[in-house]
Length: 214
Ligand SMILES: O=C(O)CCC(=O)C(=O)O
Image (cartoon, rainbow, N blue to C red; front, side, top):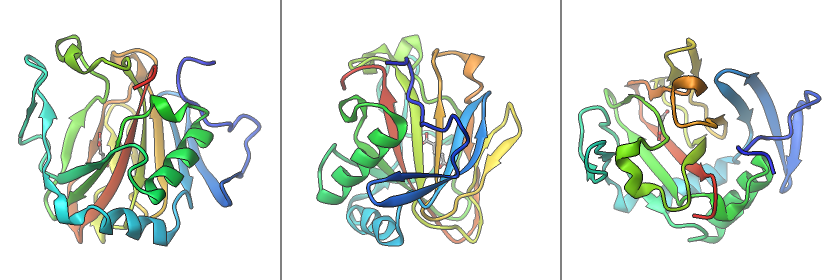
């Protein structure tokens, strides 16, 4: 097996047919390794992920680099919650679709995080891999990929930006952004940010992928 998740996009397919879904391949980039998909989730699936969790969302936290504990921080002002792996039939179906799309075992994935951003809220530039100091989170190995699903379309703002390459992906309901990072350092250029929502609200679901069984 290759060392990071990677969709089967060699040969430039316009669509990948998975789980009855015609997933559109919209954009690709090598550095950072990014692939953008549309029609990954149906409208009903987006709504289902939001309605299944909105009653339990709380202020988001970040991992403290020094201690490895979860803390609230001005860099991340969204609120959110998690689905455990396979928690509902819908979550299970989507996790299987992600595993097939990225050629990465379902057991290597963390639970699914759902975030809600209101106007002015954002997630400032950060990397998703753990630093040596947050090694407390390394059971299941380092994170090597991120799969971000946009569950609605904010009226303005709320895209995901990669400040070191100038790329910005717009948040569009049902579309998804994949990026990978083989090494836990700057070489992958996957520093990224959830840009501030300027009008409306933003809902996103994130799946982090580990190097081994999580
Ligand atoms: O909301 C976004 O666009 C980015 C979210 C993010 O960076 C994360 O969950 O790690």
